[in-house]
Image (tube, rainbow, N blue to C red; front, side):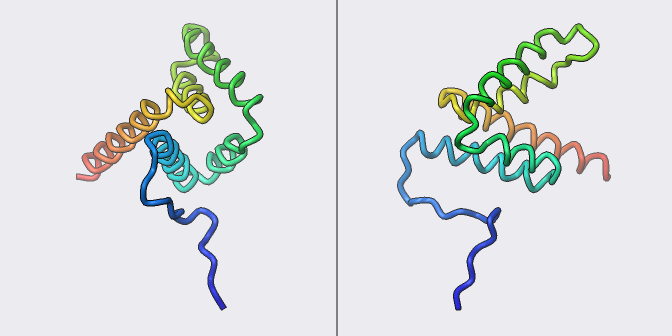
Length: 119
């Protein structure tokens, strides 16, 4: 009897990846981290990153970015810009590398900040 890996476990990727495949895999690893970090957020991320949801992701991502630009209004805020960019990065290849890099940098800063607070 063979055991199957858990659905959110590490996925094996081919040894040689094209740059586009590497960028896509890097972004998917960040989404996997978000799913593990926050189960509630993980369900939303898992739903919205499904392959057939392009017609939902692009307009919602644009709305988030526009809402972030209107940050002077009480309901909107600058937090909406990164969320919109994350949504657009799933479908726009040119955004994948900068968005994945930004997520990694923010994770590292948060880890450093947490370790400083503990001391």
